[in-house]
Length: 198
Image (cartoon, rainbow, N blue to C red; front, side):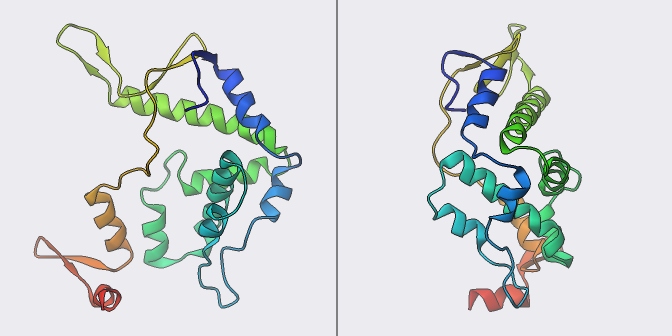
């Protein structure tokens, strides 16, 4: 979002993102990313490896998304359920895996343009779902990025820190991974969770 300065068209934003991508096909880029499983079939820290690398930020973050989608088929059982979270969500891991599969033969730049449109569309839907009518009759949208007639305008900067994790989401992830369980209406650490704490 920091790329939006003043009034900017959606097409200009998509082109900026596309211009930051390397030459070549999406398939070739994907093939050059680190492995997400070890020789013993355990998950490998590919995301951490990419974040510690020297790729430019937009390329690096897209690479992290790409390697994360591999885990859709690599993980199993409760770990997979915890990783996937709510199923069938637009921009979720399964959706992203599908989008990558259908775009493999295209260029990195074309994929970036399509992803820009997907992200803006999803952002609009989320903002509209949380919109509220103010007492004076005007509409409040919980967004810093507004679009009107194909032009984008940013009202304030995003924070530079990581996205906050809500307690309910963390509890859901830990329960899905078998670390917590709900007993008589109270969350408790499982035996497997206690092993991690010790």
